Amino acid sequence: MFIIRNYRYDDESNVIDLWNNCLTRDPINQDIFHKKVILDENFNNELCLVAEYNNRIVGFILGMSRKYPYEERGTEPERGWISVVFVDKDYRFNGIGRKLVEEIEKRLINMGKRNITLASYSPNYFFPGPDKDVYSDSIEFFKKLGYQELGEAVGMDMILYDFKIPDEVKKIEKNLNEKGYRIETFKKIYSLPLLQFLQKHFPGGWVRNARNALIKNKGEDTLLLAFDKNNDIVGYCQRAIDDIEGHFGPFGVDESLRGQKIGTVLFYKMLFDMYKRGIYHVWLAWTDGDAQRFYERAGMKVNKKHAIMKKNLK
Image 1 (tube, rainbow, N blue to C red):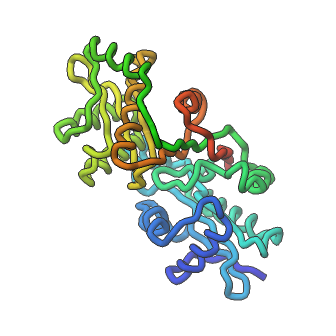
Image 2: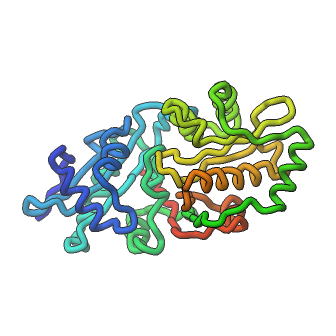
Image 3: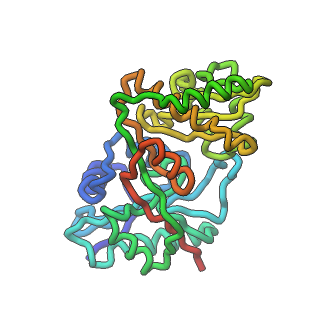
């Protein structure tokens, strides 16, 4: 008979080993486990559980609830997350996964939560939702527990060997320059206007991403900005938000100026800057809709498909 209990510090190596055996497409190491789990400011030991059978860890689940405000989103008091859950393949179909999920749900309900989102907890998510190709069984598992599939998010990537900015994009940039727009590498003097631009147009995680880069003195290496003729920031592009050099995004342009292809120029100039730095592989973890079609036109390919899932609690 298995038992469910709170995670203990000395479970660490066993949990990481089990994680890598179960989530074969999303392995982690100790540094990532500490950064994204133990050291997350919202980590709560009451929401981090293991399943144990004969003194062996055979399952793990991580729930999240905000104790601290997440920029303009605040604490999202009605919202909880299940960041990750997995069970040893030799012990599946014994109700272990169900018990882990039900226990986290019960604890989140006791905290006043009214809904649970799978996986896509910000800032420290591991994936946007269950992988449709590799962990497809988990989608049906969660549906049986009352979770709804609300949509799809994809991961994308591209090899940058022989990357060039197309002549068409160079012409677009020239036309934009003639209208007074320009693209520049971030400089520290732009810290305040950048944060103000993001707070106005892209509140929440993007503000945090930029601020973290500035605190680490990495803005000059990882940020590009678009300016108009009045020297106001109208677009922004970032990479390496988690210190992984090839991780692209986020990037965006003032909505009132979309259609002028400022974002197109930002995107290509960022990729060429990466290539010049010896970064030969660019990838992004999460996109959909029009953004996905934009990346596809630029040559990026879908490498992962994720189900976006959520449950409203009674």
